[in-house]
Image (tube, rainbow, N blue to C red; front, top):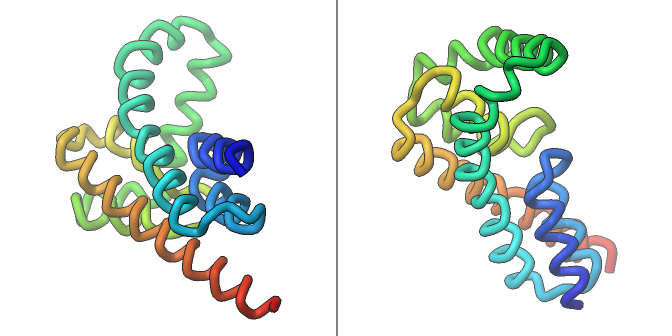
Length: 152
Protein backbone atom coordinates (compact mmCIF):
# COMPACT_ATOMS: atom_id res chain seq x y z
CA UNK A 1 0.00 0.00 0.00
CA UNK A 2 2.79 2.45 0.86
CA UNK A 3 4.52 1.75 -2.45
CA UNK A 4 1.28 2.42 -4.35
CA UNK A 5 0.78 5.69 -2.46
CA UNK A 6 4.34 6.77 -3.29
CA UNK A 7 3.81 5.89 -6.97
CA UNK A 8 0.52 7.84 -6.99
CA UNK A 9 2.31 10.84 -5.46
CA UNK A 10 5.11 10.58 -8.03
CA UNK A 11 2.49 10.58 -10.80
CA UNK A 12 1.09 13.72 -9.18
CA UNK A 13 4.52 15.36 -9.37
CA UNK A 14 4.98 14.28 -12.97
CA UNK A 15 4.19 16.59 -15.89
CA UNK A 16 2.75 13.54 -17.67
CA UNK A 17 -0.25 13.19 -15.42
CA UNK A 18 -0.25 15.29 -12.28
CA UNK A 19 -3.02 14.41 -9.82
CA UNK A 20 -5.25 13.58 -12.81
CA UNK A 21 -3.34 10.31 -13.06
CA UNK A 22 -2.04 9.94 -9.50
CA UNK A 23 -5.46 9.92 -7.83
CA UNK A 24 -7.03 7.23 -10.04
CA UNK A 25 -3.86 5.14 -9.87
CA UNK A 26 -3.82 5.23 -6.07
CA UNK A 27 -7.54 4.62 -5.66
CA UNK A 28 -7.58 1.73 -8.14
CA UNK A 29 -4.51 0.26 -6.42
CA UNK A 30 -6.45 -0.03 -3.18
CA UNK A 31 -4.90 2.82 -1.21
CA UNK A 32 -7.25 4.57 1.24
CA UNK A 33 -9.28 7.01 -0.85
CA UNK A 34 -8.79 9.94 1.54
CA UNK A 35 -5.07 9.31 1.93
CA UNK A 36 -4.72 9.21 -1.86
CA UNK A 37 -6.53 12.53 -2.22
CA UNK A 38 -4.42 14.30 0.40
CA UNK A 39 -1.12 12.79 -0.76
CA UNK A 40 -1.68 13.47 -4.45
CA UNK A 41 -3.03 16.97 -3.85
CA UNK A 42 -0.01 17.91 -1.72
CA UNK A 43 2.42 16.35 -4.18
CA UNK A 44 0.81 18.24 -7.06
CA UNK A 45 0.93 21.42 -4.99
CA UNK A 46 4.73 21.08 -4.68
CA UNK A 47 5.05 21.50 -8.44
CA UNK A 48 4.37 25.26 -8.35
CA UNK A 49 7.38 26.29 -6.20
CA UNK A 50 9.62 23.82 -8.08
CA UNK A 51 8.52 25.21 -11.45
CA UNK A 52 8.93 28.82 -10.33
CA UNK A 53 12.47 28.04 -9.14
CA UNK A 54 13.21 26.31 -12.45
CA UNK A 55 11.76 29.11 -14.57
CA UNK A 56 13.46 31.90 -12.63
CA UNK A 57 16.89 30.34 -12.05
CA UNK A 58 17.64 27.36 -14.29
CA UNK A 59 15.67 28.48 -17.36
CA UNK A 60 17.93 31.53 -17.81
CA UNK A 61 20.99 29.31 -17.94
CA UNK A 62 19.43 26.78 -20.33
CA UNK A 63 18.30 29.49 -22.76
CA UNK A 64 21.93 29.68 -23.93
CA UNK A 65 21.45 26.39 -25.81
CA UNK A 66 19.75 26.69 -29.20
CA UNK A 67 17.66 23.50 -28.94
CA UNK A 68 16.30 24.46 -25.53
CA UNK A 69 15.70 28.06 -26.59
CA UNK A 70 13.71 26.97 -29.67
CA UNK A 71 11.63 24.60 -27.54
CA UNK A 72 11.01 27.27 -24.90
CA UNK A 73 9.92 29.79 -27.54
CA UNK A 74 7.55 27.21 -29.05
CA UNK A 75 5.97 26.49 -25.64
CA UNK A 76 5.71 30.22 -24.86
CA UNK A 77 3.99 30.97 -28.17
CA UNK A 78 1.51 28.13 -27.70
CA UNK A 79 0.75 29.30 -24.17
CA UNK A 80 0.20 32.88 -25.26
CA UNK A 81 -2.01 32.00 -28.24
CA UNK A 82 -3.89 29.16 -26.51
CA UNK A 83 -5.55 30.18 -23.28
CA UNK A 84 -3.20 33.06 -22.63
CA UNK A 85 -5.68 35.75 -23.56
CA UNK A 86 -8.27 34.35 -21.12
CA UNK A 87 -5.72 34.06 -18.32
CA UNK A 88 -4.54 37.60 -18.96
CA UNK A 89 -8.10 38.92 -19.26
CA UNK A 90 -9.55 37.20 -16.20
CA UNK A 91 -6.34 37.13 -14.12
CA UNK A 92 -6.67 35.24 -10.84
CA UNK A 93 -10.03 33.61 -11.76
CA UNK A 94 -8.84 32.70 -15.24
CA UNK A 95 -5.78 30.99 -13.80
CA UNK A 96 -7.95 29.03 -11.34
CA UNK A 97 -10.22 27.89 -14.16
CA UNK A 98 -7.30 26.97 -16.41
CA UNK A 99 -5.57 24.89 -13.71
CA UNK A 100 -8.87 23.36 -12.56
CA UNK A 101 -9.86 21.77 -15.88
CA UNK A 102 -8.76 18.11 -15.64
CA UNK A 103 -7.60 17.77 -19.24
CA UNK A 104 -4.15 17.24 -20.76
CA UNK A 105 -2.25 20.49 -21.22
CA UNK A 106 -3.85 22.19 -18.24
CA UNK A 107 -2.78 21.99 -14.63
CA UNK A 108 -0.12 23.37 -12.39
CA UNK A 109 2.73 22.99 -14.90
CA UNK A 110 0.87 25.06 -17.47
CA UNK A 111 -0.34 27.41 -14.72
CA UNK A 112 3.25 27.97 -13.57
CA UNK A 113 4.39 28.69 -17.11
CA UNK A 114 1.50 31.14 -17.52
CA UNK A 115 2.47 32.81 -14.23
CA UNK A 116 6.01 33.26 -15.51
CA UNK A 117 5.08 34.39 -19.03
CA UNK A 118 2.37 36.84 -18.00
CA UNK A 119 4.30 38.07 -14.96
CA UNK A 120 1.45 37.33 -12.57
CA UNK A 121 2.21 38.14 -8.94
CA UNK A 122 3.60 34.92 -7.42
CA UNK A 123 1.54 34.94 -4.25
CA UNK A 124 -1.72 35.40 -6.17
CA UNK A 125 -0.62 32.78 -8.69
CA UNK A 126 0.24 30.34 -5.90
CA UNK A 127 -3.26 30.66 -4.44
CA UNK A 128 -4.89 30.45 -7.87
CA UNK A 129 -2.91 27.28 -8.62
CA UNK A 130 -3.71 25.85 -5.18
CA UNK A 131 -7.45 26.41 -5.60
CA UNK A 132 -7.33 25.10 -9.19
CA UNK A 133 -5.40 21.97 -8.17
CA UNK A 134 -7.81 21.36 -5.30
CA UNK A 135 -10.89 21.67 -7.52
CA UNK A 136 -9.32 19.51 -10.24
CA UNK A 137 -8.40 16.88 -7.63
CA UNK A 138 -11.97 16.90 -6.28
CA UNK A 139 -13.35 16.39 -9.80
CA UNK A 140 -10.96 13.53 -10.57
CA UNK A 141 -11.40 11.96 -7.13
CA UNK A 142 -15.22 12.10 -7.38
CA UNK A 143 -15.26 10.72 -10.93
CA UNK A 144 -12.92 7.88 -9.96
CA UNK A 145 -14.97 7.09 -6.86
CA UNK A 146 -18.22 7.04 -8.89
CA UNK A 147 -16.59 4.80 -11.48
CA UNK A 148 -15.30 2.41 -8.81
CA UNK A 149 -18.76 2.18 -7.23
CA UNK A 150 -20.27 1.57 -10.68
CA UNK A 151 -17.85 -1.32 -11.28
CA UNK A 152 -19.00 -3.14 -8.13
